[in-house]
Image 1: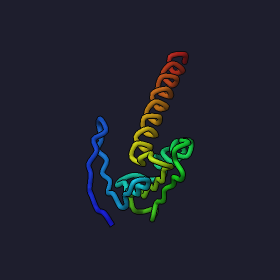
Image 2: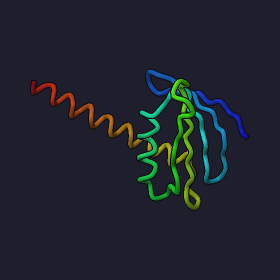
Image 3: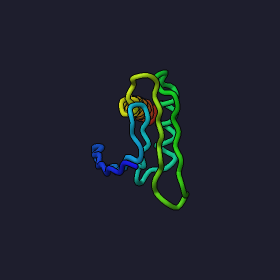
Image 4: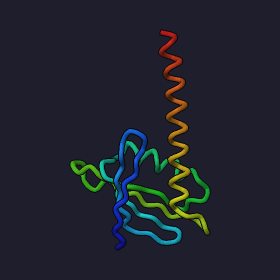
Length: 108
């Protein structure tokens, strides 16, 4: 088991994750402080990617604030790249929602 703690800064908040497994086409990470909200969305975008063979996540216990995400990619695609692309799509979708929501509020 490869244990690496990484701290990622996402604008106003920080996300900590630990690499549990990594090889050329598989990545298993534990994300601290996350549950179904982010992981379900991440899984949705990952499984829509044709270069992803399998993607899933688990929340080991509902009272513990962490989730485990697993990604297996096809051919030479790196799983880290698939996750980065999925996160870019999530951000774009959030920005689109924000814009539409703000426009709707102006009409009230």
